[in-house]
Image (cartoon, rainbow, N blue to C red; front, side, top):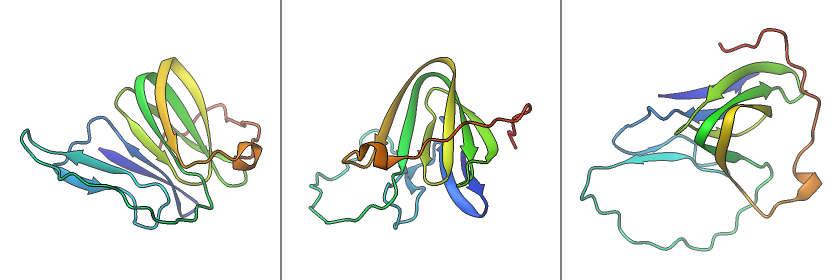
Length: 142
C-alpha cells in the first residue's frame, strides 16, 4: 500500500507502507524530482546488471528527504507552507516516507530507530526554517 499526501493541491509526501510489494521496479516519483523513490521486488535468481552511475551536474533548490523506519513508531504531522497544521500519519517498522514539500514535524510514539536520506551537502541553518508546532486538540488522520 502507498499513499500520497496532498496539501493545497501540492504533493507533499509519498508514504510507502511495509505492506507494499509489487513485482518489478515501481518508481513512485516523477523524473523531475530531485530525490527519487522506487520499490524493487524480484524473485530469487533475478540478475540486476552491474553498472556505474555517471557524473551528471544537477541543481537542487529544495531539500527532499526519505525516512526509513527500522524500529518503533513515529507520528508525522504535516503543515502547509504557512505552518498551518493539516494532517497526521503514524509510521512503523518497514515504512518509508519521502518528504517532498510543505512543513512537517514528528512525535516519537515508541522508541524509534530510523534512517534519513537527503541531498547534500548540508547547508546548516539555510537548509530549513523552524516554526512552532500548533496542533489541534483532535488530530486529522483522514
